[in-house]
Length: 71
Image (cartoon, rainbow, N blue to C red; front, side):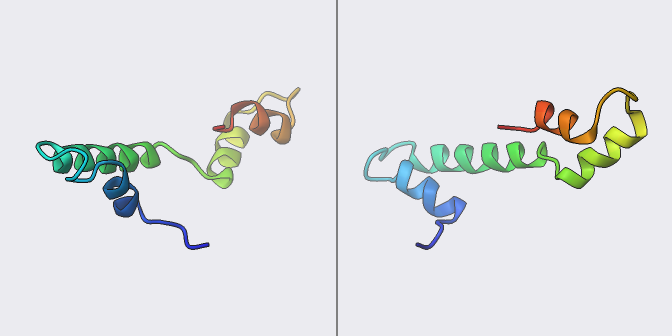
């Protein structure tokens, strides 16, 4: 199954047929919001570096990562 692009998802959710007056505006807002949210995502490697630089000796990385990873 092919994964749809962000633009395809926006078009499906906010088509001009469903929203004739503001479809484009809603699509743009959806796309910009998704891109903004992605900027706040961190990789496991980024989190590991942050943990090592400011770690507490009683925590293992796996315990810390599981508690703070995005769900």
